Length: 471
DNA sequence: TCCGGAATCC
DNA sequence: GGATTCCGGA
Image 1 (tube, chains in turn brown, green, red):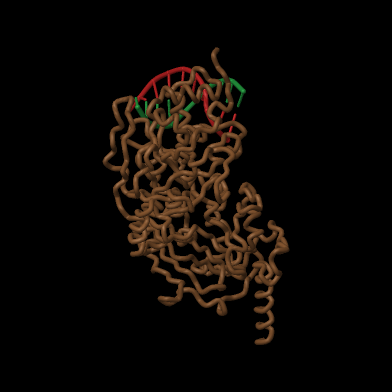
Image 2 (cartoon, rainbow, N blue to C red):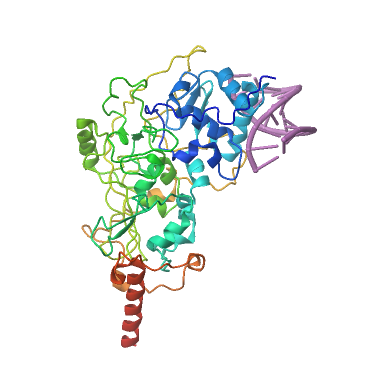
């Protein structure tokens, strides 16, 4: 046997050329980080290959977002066999393993395209980051004004931080929360959505992956988790954004960011957090063309704002473009009125050109499927070969009732659909998470009065006091 | 080329 | 559980 059993065959860092791909967190490329498994899983391995430029001739992102083509099936199989010490591995077996993912909805086959598969980001992300699953959790459901929710979970940064033990928090800017960068008070603590690069979105947003840096220890300028820096030029890009810098080995392929898929497949209310398309999107997108900022110009880093008072969801304006249309428009409520999920804008164009460049096809080319690869495709799994149709799947289809919802504007400009905070009932009961999440005191750096959690208690106390007075 | 069942291994 | 291997069928 010539099995080398090199467990880290692909581990040596490679030059950090950006790989056309996705803003997966770094751990996604790390076999040792494979959730629930000590062994590398095939889809991790695939991601790993996709991320490494030296394997671009073997496997590469192509076409739709999340879509990749195995240019050299035998080589991929060989590499997989080496990794798994299976010298007899071949593409047939490997593809069987890939098919194994169909039911799990991690992957699905791109029909009509040879050796072409597509990651289901919503699944991949949700499997590994329950935060994106919180739309299904009481945590956010409880916040759902639109559904009459009025409970008051502990929305303190500490509490939310505790929800994401996997997330790094070096205390040196990698915290999920921004502190001290904004005025104290409701804006004092913001869950850093920019810590979730794969959440950053626009539509039809094409993003670059965090692979300007290698998959392993990095030293990004801003020390973002997973080494992704949304502020870097090109952190988010447009499908028609400027070409790559000279010297890049890769075509100017840009891919819609998984967030679009992930969020758009989330049930209400999280789907409501999707930034609305606005006329400014195009302008901003156009602005993004200049200076090679790839859409960050004029935009704000994604923020998940967690003001002290729970009870309402709001979101800042963002540019998602035309994909979601107007139906999911939810704007920010007045400051201090509740949990604010402000997703800052990431400027995005609405162009349709992808600038895709077909990679060299060793096997006679990839047949393009006329029925796929639309400008934007919210992952539609309806054609999956999965049998688990009863499996809950986050999805916002055109047929979704959400599409019929009236636009909701919370910014007060057009009349809030939400009641003022003063009219909201006080929290009815502690959120279940409260029992699980210890409330930690505010950090010494923050005066108690500025602590979101303290403010919450104070406000709650005020409410109770007023009720007593009135009664 | 792709699919999925089944048995099997680790 | 997550493949791996084999296989027949489309």
